[in-house]
Image (cartoon, rainbow, N blue to C red; front, side, top):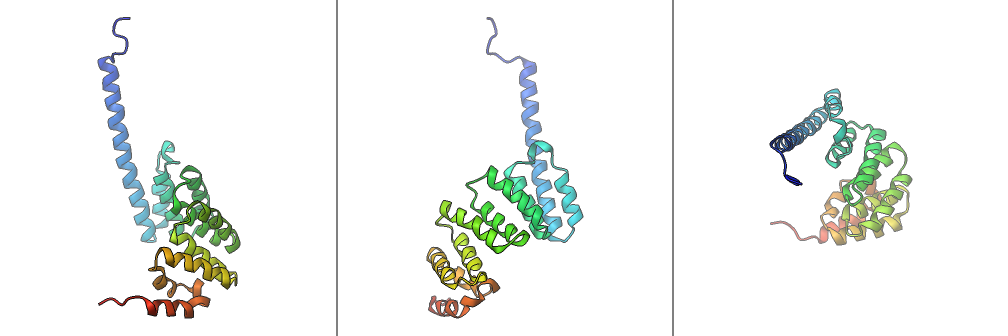
Length: 192
């Protein structure tokens, strides 16, 4: 068949237009997400929601959009909405460690520490080298008065990242461990 496999000038022009349009949409999406975060950080919550509402339907399950929604609703302390988007983000990007951490945080605020802990127990099996997950498990265990488990999780955390020793001394969730953490901090090399 003559001309089979060849694109006509019209088809080629349409593909170039489609590609150009897609690039413009992606640039526009980046601005929308940036504006939404900025408005939320400034406490301009209605404006942040307005930006999020302007996202095209085809982009609603884009991981960048979901991450932004999780962040914005977290800043606004709308825990149920944060949890909803974090669940979808975990479904769409199951290898995104941060998604699981955000889901646990939202679940803690929307429901309970026990339910948040369950999220992270599943996540730690997938991401055993993530110090933040171990740190948050230590926080949850301490808040549930399981200090033995809190110590174990915290020890694993600082084996992965000793900088969490400094963070722990500012975290009320770990207050029951502060005397032990202060001893660990005293053993850290001092900055000169």
